[in-house]
Image (cartoon, rainbow over all chains, first blue to last red; front, side):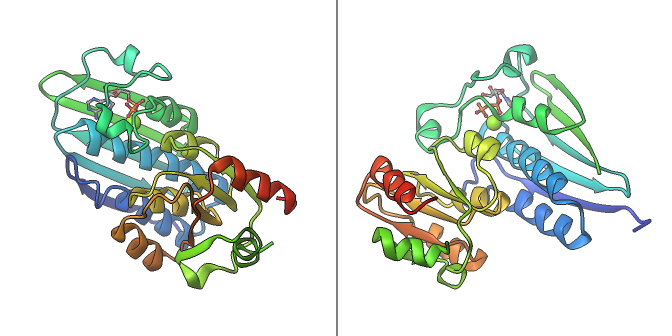
Length: 140
Length: 110
Ligand SMILES: Nc1ncnc2c1ncn2[C@@H]1O[C@H](COP(=O)(O)OP(=O)(O)O)[C@@H](O)[C@H]1O
Ligand SMILES: [Mg+2]
């Protein structure tokens, strides 16, 4: 597998019907390629949490998964509203999700911490009024 | 133990994903917060919850869980059942609460 595989998904705000499709499809591709199962599990977690954040908190965006021979890079980028205090957002248990979202079991405030924990490299950049970009690298 | 045998012994009603009832149950995990499940539920677990919307199927499939047990008689959304059938993820329902189900699972040696 010398070649690079690139997967791209548009993720719409509030689309709970299709939420999880990008991460589910990513997992299937990784499995087909023969990526080790512990890496698949971590990739599934970071992609799912990134996807759900786009659905729940953003105005829409995209997830790009690049699979190289030695690493997987997952990028989640959206078009706003941006995060006013990134350090706060990274804290376990911090969530601005409204009650109706929490009742569905989302909004535990564990998404970003889990994404960081499951990636080997993690970066988040956000600007209010512009958007948020999260880049996660997992070594195979 | 297979999902099928567990469902029979605990009187759980299979509602979807019937073609995956031979999945092996390796353990169990109880939680209604999806990020906690994502972080902690082990492969092959039976997931005990009261969530019943379509996203639970994605969570269960991403983690290779054995099945989802929806407790307390919560009605499972039609699109959840449809997705579970498409993906081959058993969804079992029961009127019992999570505690009773977990006691039952322990008695089965899970
Ligand atoms: N893409 C995003 N756009 C805007 N805000 C975000 C985004 N991702 C995360 N946040 C903010 O960071 C908080 C923490 O995110 P996270 O750890 O995933 O927990 P949760 O999604 O359960 O709220 C969110 O509640 C939200 O305020
Ligand atoms: Mg989140």
